[in-house]
Every structure is written in structure tokens, then in C-alpha cells.
Length: 438
Ligand code: UGA
Image (cartoon, rainbow, N blue to C red):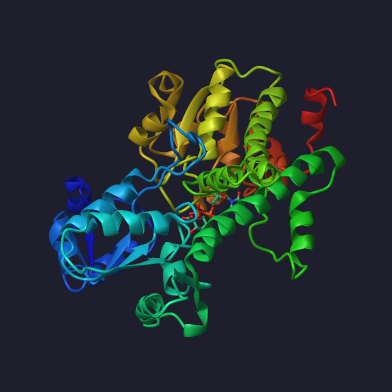
């Protein structure tokens, strides 16, 4: 297996002791295989020439300009990879689409490959093999996946043979009954649909969390009760300040855009509403912070614990913390940020120079919490649960507020200590009710 990238710095990092991404268990896998059957290189041409099978895993972000801007997937990197593969291939290849792509991308890529390969008689078989692993649990998801999905032109012999070749690769560690084959378009659409449905569950429970706060119901009890229905199941029902990550929003917008292109406006609107509910949840959280603190957070130090979009990753793409921080800065807050994995440079890139005038990044939680008026929990890092909250209460201004955007802390214990606690979808603290005049 040779992993190639044009970026020398990145490849150097993959060849060093400091891998360019943080993912539990990844270091061990790379160390065990690097130099034996796993190589990292910038020599794309040689790797393409030598390969029988090429996995294309390039970025497919949302388009920022032009037709479909803000919704459609930008396939620039995919097309450029395909052009290179075509230019350098001198033997038949199986091309595996790993990146998440709009439905029928394989067809477009096949055209690029066929029209640009100068070597005579070279044949490309295109397969779609969408990736279902989640960050933070990537290695477990890879070693014991719920399923592996391989889409190909199973209506003809060549396509079936290409599928079978990839099935054989996975069968080295995945039970065969978990390796599914489908036609190309079904595989591509399954990926977008899986992410859209997962995100929709979160938006649904987040919508209910707002209603819980008005009625006195407890969203955790509701999640538990509905999750016992085997048709619903217990996973992905944690109310949160909003879903983040590089995939959910991007894939839903992409799915909705494809629906629009096919004249299915009602279907598109249905999926847009999942993103709309996610935005509402972030705004609602900021509103709670401001109204609870007597309608002003101007110049108040607010500790933000966590910036990554979920625990066990340093990834901040589309993290709800960006919108929450921006919202609180708009109201004049001074944010004291601590995340165990996200470096200051990353926060700077996400928030921009202007916002950084109101954000201080700390390397430890103690300094972030000293003299703070409030704490907001943005990521469900386990370490936040282990802090000595009694001690934290002592060093904060009073009344000391905790806004738990992940529902991970022991709220009864915090209230006992003296904190005013707001937790998503939980019965509202009487102090907060009176602050809001409710
Ligand atoms: C997601 C999918 O879960 C993967 O199956 C898919 O392969 C991946 O996208 C992708 O397309 O590459 P990922 O974005 O890494 O994986 O992380 P998730 O665990 O799905 O979490 C996404 C967001 O939802 C996070 O912000 C998380 O905190 C939030 N979330 C998750 C909730 O708010 N509540 C929940 O109950 C679960």
C-alpha cells in the first residue's frame, strides 16, 4: 500500500513520529506497518504506474463559488486526480471512489479517464466504496465495520470481477456477510443518505430538547425511552449544541442540491431543514447564555471548554464551537478557550484575526477557568468530567454559571456546589427562569 500526496510536508509528517492527524490507535497501526507494506510518498506518478488498484480519497468540499455554490460538491481535486491517473497509467486499473461524491460521479470520472489516457488499450474499472468510519473511532470502525459497501457495474462481467477483487481485499479481515455489493449509483447515494439520516436523528432530538426545556421533560429520559424501541435504537440520540464535522452539513447540502437539480424541491427542503435545526440549536444556546447572565456578557470572561467537533479528535471543521464563540463575541464576551487537542493556530484559522482579539487560548484548563463568569462545554472530552468542580467554583466569579452543551457533567452535583446550571433539554434551573422573567 503506497499512500501518495502532492504535499511534501504532509508526507514527511506521515513518515515521522508526529503523524499529521490525531486519532486513537492510529500511531500503532502506522508504526507496525510503515516500511513493510505501508509506504508514504510524493511520487504520485510511480505509485500510479505500479498500482493495480487506486483508492482516490481527495477532498470534496462544498463549492464556494459558481453554479451550486454553498451546496454542490467541488470535484476539482477528484477531476485532477483522475487526469493524473489517466496520463500516467500504462496498465489496467481498478479505480476506487473513496471520497464522498455526488451521485453519478463515477460516470463523469470514467469519461475523464477514458478520454485522457494516451496509452492504448488501458481499461479502467470504477468502483464506489464509500467510507463509513467516524473520527475518534476510526481504527475500530475500520477493523470491525458494521458493513463495507462496494458499488460497481455489477450488470456486466468486468464490473462484477472488479467488485470481486475489492471484496477479496476486505475479506482478509471483514466477514463476507458484512461486505455488500450494489450498483454504482446505489453505493454513492447510500453514503449521502447514511450521513443525512444520522444528522437528521440529531436534529430531531435537538428539536425535542427545546420542547423539553419548555415543558419540564428531560431529553435524556426521552432519548432513553425511545431508544428502547428496537425500530429506533439507542445510538445517535444525544442532544447537543449541534452536530459538526466535515461531513454531515456538507453531505446534506449536497444531497439537497442533487434533489433540487432533479426538480424535487420538497425533498430538498426536507433535508435543508435538518441543517436549519442545527443552526437554530447553536443560536438558541448562545441566547441562553446571554439571557441567563442578565442579558449582558460584555467584557465577561467566559471559559470555553472544548473546540473540536467531537471528543478524541483535534478536528475543528464545522465545529459548533465556531458559531457559539462568534455569537458570544458579538455580545462582547471575552472567551478563554481550552481544548486538549486543538492548537491556537487552528482556532485562529477558524475564527479569524478580528475574533481572536476576544479569544485567549490556554494550554491548561486552570488558567482558562480562573476568574471566569461562566463555563461553556462545547466538546464531550472525558477529562472535563474528572475536574474538581468544587475547586473551580472557588476561583470563578459569582453567580458562577455552567452551560453544558454536551450534557456530560453531573448537573445535580454542580447545583449542590452552588453553580447555576443550564443543560440542553433539561428542566430549567429556577434562577434561570427568573433571569428570563419566565
Ligand atoms: C460521520 C459519520 O458518523 C460516519 O459514518 C461517516 O463515515 C463520516 O461522517 C464521514 O462521512 O466521513 P464523523 O463526522 O467523524 O462521522 O463523526 P460523528 O460521530 O458522526 O459525529 C458528527 C457530529 O454529530 C459531532 O459533532 C457529534 O458530536 C455530533 N453528535 C453525534 C451529536 O450531537 N449527538 C449524537 O448523538 C451523536
